[in-house]
Amino acid sequence: MQSSFTARPRTLFLDTHDVARLLGVMGLPEAFRALVGRLKADYLRWPEFDKEARIAAYSEQGTIELMPITDGTSYTFKCVNGHPGNGAYGLPTVMAMGALLDCDTGMIRMMSELTLTTALRTAATSVMAAQALARPDSRSMAVIGNGAQSDFQCIAFHALLGIDELRLYDIDPQASVRLQRNLQASELGGKPLQIRICDSVAEAVRGADIVTTVTAYQGQEQVLTADLIEPGMHLNAVGGDCPGKTELEPKILEQASVFVEFSPQTRHEGEIQQMAADFPITELWQVLAGQVAGRRSDAEITLFDSVGFALEDYCALHFIQAAATQYGVGRWVDVTPGQEDPRDLYGWLLAHEHAEPALA
Ligand SMILES: NC(=O)c1ccc[n+]([C@@H]2O[C@H](COP(=O)([O-])OP(=O)(O)OC[C@H]3O[C@@H](n4cnc5c(N)ncnc54)[C@H](O)[C@@H]3O)[C@@H](O)[C@H]2O)c1
Image (tube, rainbow, N blue to C red):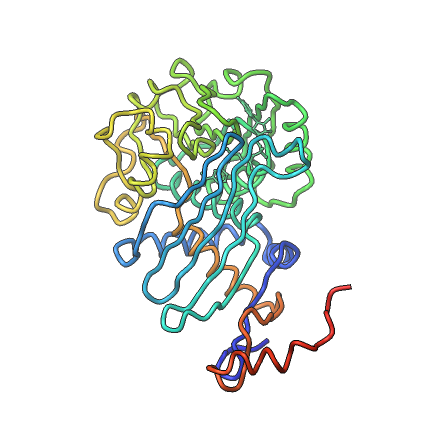
């Protein structure tokens, strides 16, 4: 692998097979541990980042979002979609790609798949929030919505929070069977997982320490209603993440202490879009930095209103770049022409225009 672009400006390219290989070498629990550590470190640098709410294109079927961020050294962006009806076309609901650039030169250091990586960083962020907000004695979690993201949430909470009892519910019972099968086939270490497939949201939620909602529906659903919420619960609301797409009955928000990633984005996209513009919330970084208390009592209901923020993708891109370099995974591609005279772009084209097309 080339470590510098001084000779030739090449870009590291990682596809899903490369990222799968990296996660295979590291092991998912270990990858989560390392990523949560990095996320915390980056969240503690919050004031150093130039932050903005993501730029979104909305259609009836879903959303396509561009998520840029920089700390003045690196610039990263992710392009991600959310189309809950994609199953009908044999496509995942969420797909993503992204890039990491040097601020000093604009050099494109890395381009990568971010579909697997999004599932990884979303679960890692949920765990980071739960470590600060859930009761430390939490052992059971209800998981409502058992699609693509859910396996990663379950594994991360098992590995890092000691969750060893899972209650699964999905409107599609086959989704829960798939999730259970995958978890049983995984080597996760720690205490054995007890997994129960439930017939209703109420059955899954009753007595759970943590409730994760990670459903995909293009509209305002009330997946979780206030009558199901018990004192001391931590709610990890992941699925409501764009305007007009929510999972919780608004009454729950009134009962809970609500924590968010980046408030200008979450007020527009999160569960709190259902509340007044001055509805009280706390940004998660303030809790991590020790500026504001997280959970204040065992009886408090805490809610992480997750929508996904660009800082998490910045962190994940750096994480997989470091791992790819360590394990020699990925390949170098010429996204930028490597002409000897950087101003002679046309000369480079003249030298290459008669080259044989590489595609069959
Ligand atoms: N907050 C974040 O950072 C973040 C990141 C990635 C994805 N997401 C969101 O998470 C959600 C799930 O993503 P995914 O990739 O797992 O989608 P998916 O389509 O693979 O799975 C969604 C599952 O939810 C189930 N479902 C739908 N409505 C339900 C309901 N009312 N009750 C129970 N189950 C229901 C579906 O049957 C499906 O199995 C999406 O809405 C996505 O936009 C959020």
